[in-house]
Amino acid sequence: MHALQHLACGLSFDAAIKVTAAAELASPSTIRAEYAEFIEAGTITPPDTSHRGRGNPDHPLHSSNTDKYGPSFGAELLIHKLTESQKTEGASITSTTIAAELRAKLGLSVHRSTIRRWLHALGYRWRNKRYVGGMKPQAKNARIRQFILEYAEALLEEQNGTAVIVYMDESFIHAHLARKKGWFHTSSRDVIGDDNGTRLIILHAMTDNGLLVIPDEIASNWLSEPSLTAELVFEEIFEDGQDDSDYHNTMTGLKFIAWVRNRLLPTFAELHPGKKMILILDNAAYHKTRDETWITAATSQTKHELAHQLIDLGVTQLTRTNGKVVPSHGFEASISNGGPSKEDLIAAVQQWLEQHPDHNKTVVEQLMSDAGHTLIYTPPFCPEVQPIELLWAKVKRYVADRSTLNRSINEARQQTEEGFEQITKMFCNSIVKHCHNWIDNFIQTESAEELQQCGSLAGVIKYLPLLKASSTTTNNTQPVQFHSPLAASVAPTAPPTSKANTLRKRH
Image (cartoon, rainbow, N blue to C red; front, side, top):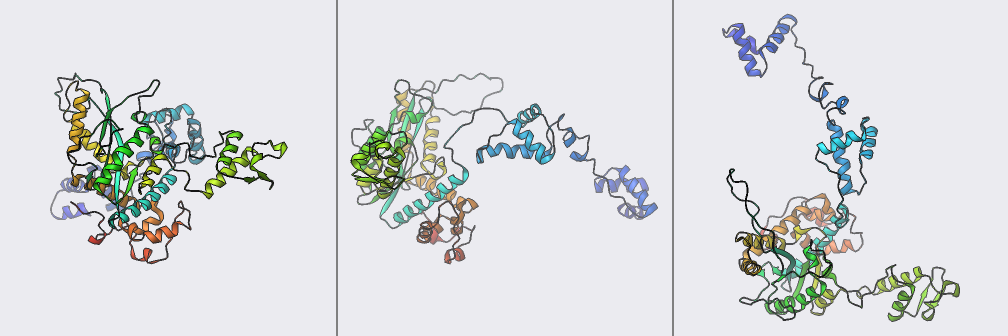
């Protein structure tokens, strides 16, 4: 019809065909064939696309040619899904299991060597697994939800003027820290550099109003000396046989406890007298140092140790699994002599701990509790909720921008301290807000479960009493459906926009 219109306007047949072909994005020969068929039969046969793309048996990615060329699209998607299940489900995936799944689900019979070739072509490599926490996504999401509830309660206390939230963390800076990239002419490929140099360990704490430090206070590297600043920059010192690949090995529980006692607590008391501190920190082992009062029901303990542990706790008797009561003087007796088994002793210790939930406290928890403060641990491997991580990036960038060849450790320390001086109240406020935005985005996903109905962190704060009440009767890992004004008044995905719901104001 397009060509006929051009013919009616006076164009020649060839000109009409060429103009039509250009307009229809087709070749002139195709238009001529279709035109001839239409004039002769009054119809046009739809084009046959069965042999186009992967539908063509001669195409390299057709399922019949997978052994020669590579996996079909369906096979490639299945391979990606199976390899991802190693992280999400802890599944064991090998070339044998992939071949079996392809045979069962797609009807493809492929040899294991071909599977391995495909995996290499897709960017996969056979290498060691890295076990970092061993936490599945469902468990991690549950831990994030628990943190959001605890954090919302802390924000409510801060808004009421009774508490101040403090964020703390540790990091490191190398003496020769420098930017990894720069502008270089292509004719000069060799650039002289140096190694990382000595490593400095840095500790600090901040609020949304700035760093936790008294102005003009000079920090000492001697943790035994009280100082009115949370800043600490010290050179790493390794012990014999210590692994130097992780800076966490330089930190110890004793150093952290000394920092809390002589830096954090006095500085906070000076800056915020009469207020409660809510400390946000991660799950590093040295943050949870235990003393000799810690009670455990570990199976690694001997029967003698478990028995004396119960006696020291004042337990006068226990009940065996068969219902027989054993007095304390018979805790160490053998089973044949009427004594308890090791499992009976462990069960007795666990029962005592359940009856005394406040007994086991780490040294830091006890220090904070004695001072009227509390702790909130961030979810494992979730730095997005810890604003001080962004502070480290700014300080390290400051030091990297001032790099010189073979910079001394003293110069690096001085520049690090100067970097801390560049941290303003507005910057701290902005990075706290950045983390709040991440929490808002998480709440608007299905992973937030019952919190999704709140819409944002401000919504969680608003409906905190209802959420806490529901959590006491429902497993935290299971979603809670609210039949209340909460579900009716809060949009599930729309974040609040009113000024009344703003968590922070800029300073």
